[in-house]
Length: 153
Image 1 (spheres, helix red, strand yellow):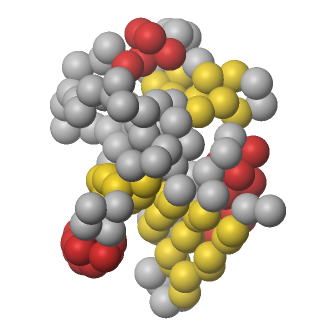
Image 2 (cartoon, rainbow, N blue to C red; image 1 turned 90 degrees about the vertical axis):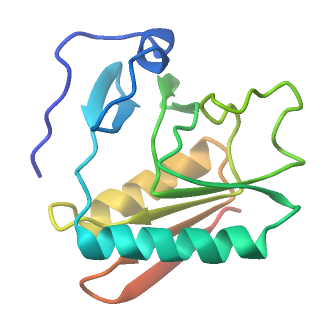
């Protein structure tokens, strides 16, 4: 796996203030780490799952793709950007502004494995999500045609 990051250490506030662009970044260990640009099948799968999830959750919460989540990982600020996120209206604070990162742990994150990542990396990330308060994690491996479903607790 190739990891390229912005060399300068950032605070969470500096990371969240970065301008939007063609590359999505996750905030990991005080660095902005770019996500791999998805290929056609990954993008199509993400779109299809997003539409299915959105239709299933109408009136219950928010569903979004590539939405940064403000969490803690190993007692440090962490802002992962899962392929898909669902958060119920019950969890989403009333003061949340529509164009901000998700301020609390969502109910569900879905990660689709890219060819240069491994299931082990995403299983470790699922543990980080649970430690941060996420309830459910789905890891989809398009090459193996599998979905691993993890539930906290």
